[in-house]
Image 1 (cartoon, rainbow, N blue to C red):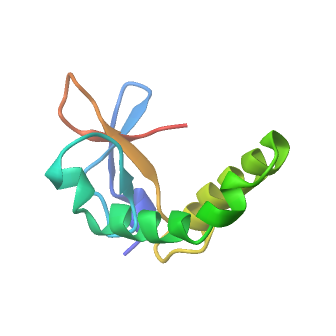
Image 2: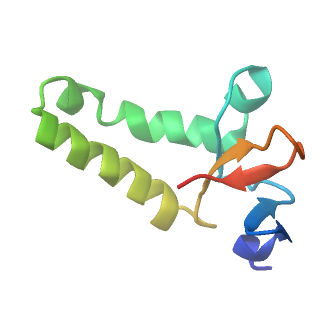
Image 3: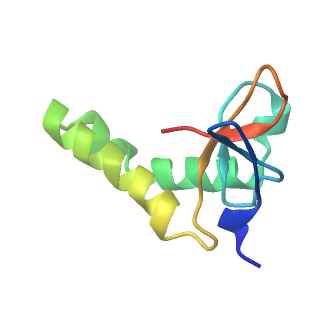
Length: 95
């Protein structure tokens, strides 16, 4: 099954029918906090904390891009950063 194709298109927005275990859900609360993808994301981030706090602004940007790249290319299936659409209640990928 291609997890990237599990989407419902409305207008020009692609909504995700069901987030995968590697997706990072943006938002507040226990539901997003306990989601498997968010747990993996926090683990990845924790590996860079010491390096990040002593880095220059340019290095911090590079570290942040590396973390996003890790989620989007090294997880299986590739992770996405999703936010819940206020109007439809469905998840959508953020840029």
